[in-house]
Length: 377
Image (cartoon, rainbow, N blue to C red; front, top):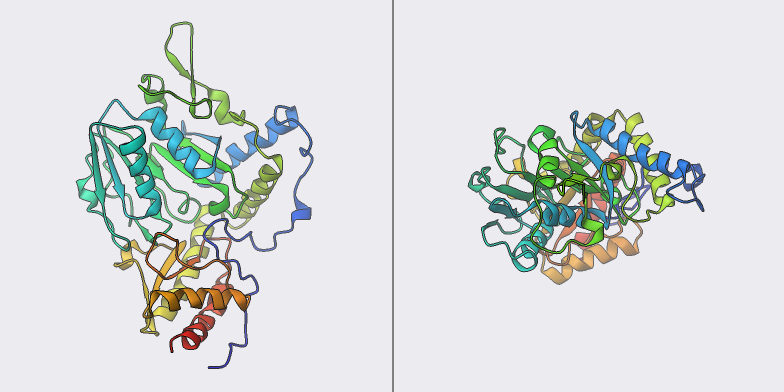
């Protein structure tokens, strides 16, 4: 088979850090805050704007708070679990690497006694009906390393008594999140909108805030996890300034400028509905290809749980040859960083979030066939 005539204009299909937005130009960033304190009036203004614009574009309900926290999505999830869990039993659902990371935290670090763990193998979901919303429930919305996401929020009880803690790092801005059913939502800039790494976003519902102000964790709390201070009445009170851009530790103002640029693009792209449409169009390009090539398959076992961002594929080849396909595509400069995650079954993982162009995904598909033909013998 001869090489395809068309190459993706942007070969960046990594699942994190993800492709920059179309038309990205670093020289267009607002760099006034570089070399300035993040506590300066300008620094605070830009950090607060990152919070308020995120809330507006995501459509957060009134009373929900959003703040910038350390250590990317991982930091945001662990900050939430360390701060909020303990008063009720906990159910955790896991079906890929990052969900299993939260299981490890709950079992081996927090050592919760009243804990139910519901697991499924890569490609499947656990039975969502097992989740008891009289308890706290921890889960990922989208399994970044398996390409399996929850189909919707119908399984989450509206009259829940416990909290829902949702890792949405590869779902935010590309999937329809039912905010009224989510008490804690976390994501990171480098996945959601192709921003830079190291910063996480933490969304809290009023119910989550009420838990913070009524609960004292039984374990030590590192400074970067603390969201409350003790008032004169000795009761914990939310540090509201965190959710107005007064970050716990020093952020990168260069990364903040980059994120604000991404938010401006997202707003111009019709916000979340427009970004979801872009992501779905990217997935459609892969679905059309898989439907006509019997040697490649979605890792997700059912269409309803198929991710439109972290699209994971299996190939009817030995593992070594699948890995060779990914290396060959990178060597040709048509697809970077698309080998499956190290803990996942051998395969390909193509980021189809909103910052990727559907034309680039479509251009990549013939190259998959070319690479398959090159290595299958």
